Every structure is written in structure tokens, then in C-alpha cells.
Amino acid sequence: MTSIKSKCLVISAATLLIAGLLGARAEAQFFQGFEAQVGMEYPMSMQVRAKANLPQSWFATVGVGMSPAFLTDSYSSLASSLGIHGENTSKLAAAGLNNNIYLDLRGGYEFSATEDNSFYVDFGYSLSVGKGGQTDMDTIEQALDRDFFGIMQTAKPDISSSLHSLTVHVGYTKRLSNSFFLVLEAGLIKPIKSTTEVSFDSFVTPTNEEEVDREVDSYLEGVYTGEMFVPTFSAWASYLF
Image 1 (spheres, rainbow, N blue to C red):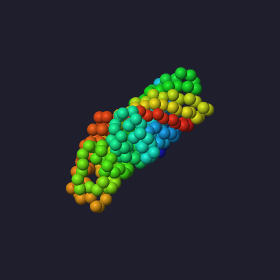
Image 2 (image 1 turned 90 degrees about the vertical axis):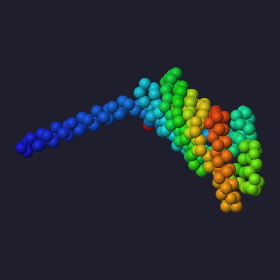
Image 3 (image 1 turned 90 degrees about the horizontal axis):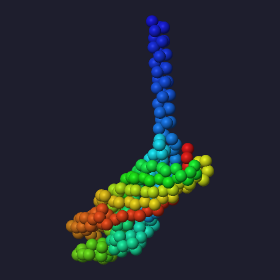
């Protein structure tokens, strides 16, 4: 009886060991390598990213970062100069994204030109959500082309926008050493859904605050999902494990 139990234990242990080895081998075959990346996507975010290299030149990346005010403010200048939005609309749209948390998910395919140089294309989804920034009533009224009576022109409301977007990028990867790479890319971000909140200090009545909040949310939803296309330029330092 004891011998039978021992044989069963040995068989079970062997089965688990074989399953573990097969699983490890399958995982090793599926994941061809991992990369840690850090960089900036102008004019939207600064990120740290993880990249998983998959079989047959496919890859996936996950990035987390933030949108500091100096980047989103530069979008305001870029958008107004390119004629994407008017000047005040650009300022208002950018203020809503100031200091937001940024999530970047992508999948793509890499075309190897040589051992040390390659090109790629990827498609993905991004989410910008969080703190937002501050604007002023003059910018709001000029952007919306209307007056909000009963609110002082000196009022500086806080504005926070959440943005869901689809993305596409093309890029170039240069091997610098066995483990280090330089990645340069250009892309386009197209928002598909947004929500915006506007809040004031206590000297503004709740009725006025609700009206401004509702009007700005409706206006910026049209701006973000209708007018807004964000051309981006990125540089990443990448380390292959």
C-alpha cells in the first residue's frame, strides 16, 4: 500500500514537473523579450513603458505617465498655430488636460531592416484622466462666444477633462548596444469620448456653477471628439532584458 502511494506521489510530482517545464518553455517561446522604456510623447505625455516582444515580430506596450502643464500648454500653441482650434478654445482644451495621469496601451508589428535598425507601426488606446488645471472666465466666454452673467471676470475656475482616444504611430528603432535602443516615432491621437468638470470657489452660486459646468462640458466634448487631432513626436530610451 505504501509502495502504491509512493508511486502515485512520484507520478504526480513528475507530472507537475513536466507541466511546469512545458509551461515555462511555452512562455519562453511566446515572450521573445521584455523592454523597459522611458521617454516623452510631445505634446501629450511623459511615460515609463513596458514592451513585450512577441513571436513573428509582433509586440505590445503598456505605458503610464502624466501630462505636465508645459506639454499641454505647448499643445495649445501648436493647435492654434495649425488652425485646429481658435486661440481661446486651444487654451481651454489644454487646461483641462494639465497634470493628468496618462495611460497608453498599444499593439504593433516591427519590420526589421537590418540587425541594428528596424521600423514599426502600432495601434492603440490612451486614457487621460486626473487633476486638470485652471482657466479664467474670459477664456471660457471667448471660447464659447457667450456671457455668463453673475460671475466675476476675475474668477478662475478649475477645469478637469477625461479623454479616451485611439492612437496610431510609426517609428524607427536604432540599436545602440546589446541591450540599449533609441526609439523615435511620429503619431496621431484622435479622441473619441470626453467628460469635463468645471468648479469654482465658494463665491460663485451653485446655479451659475452648474450652468458653466454643463456648457463647457458640452462645448469641449464637441471640440475634443470633433475638431481635435493631436500630431505627436516621441523619443524613447529602451533597455532589453
